[in-house]
Length: 215
Image (cartoon, rainbow, N blue to C red; front, side):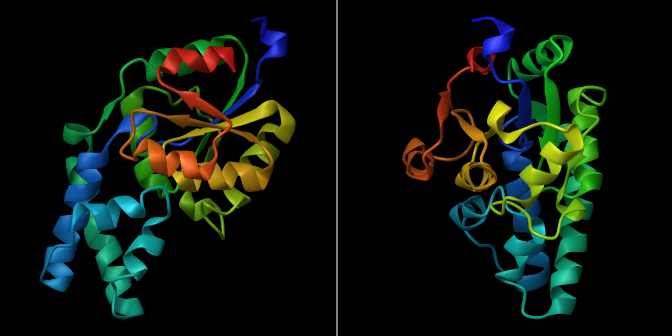
């Protein structure tokens, strides 16, 4: 398919889409829960909130604003300390992003991660140049599944919604993209079950990163 007939703007989620960091995320949550709650919650509890901001996830178990702030600090410290040892790119994604960049597609990162962690992830992926536009949790008032992060990325890229696709691994990504009026692509290699993603109604399904060239 000729480039003029394909999408021109690609908005990428980070964790579970570009960066295989799910084990790191879960270990960070379990560590935080043990320290502050004296117990662990099942993986399923934390996975259900993947794709939403850290504050949103931890506010569901924190018993006060003070405890929430302390839990966020504990999580971030643990996550950043182990980040480069545990996180890694999913096979093929870096090469695909680099080719899209060479082909002059507009690219942005749209993540529910705070900018400190997101920037660390981008550097680990070696995509600092390709993702000069990054919309993180601390850049918006409302994180995914709200449309605000997607709309902000489109504005920074000066890109119309009808030429954009949001690529993500969670139903929160799909909902945010739908609310913003962009096409959505659900990747198969993240932690979410196909049935859960199907219920969100993505525009496209991506089994291999190279399929993004055909959108």
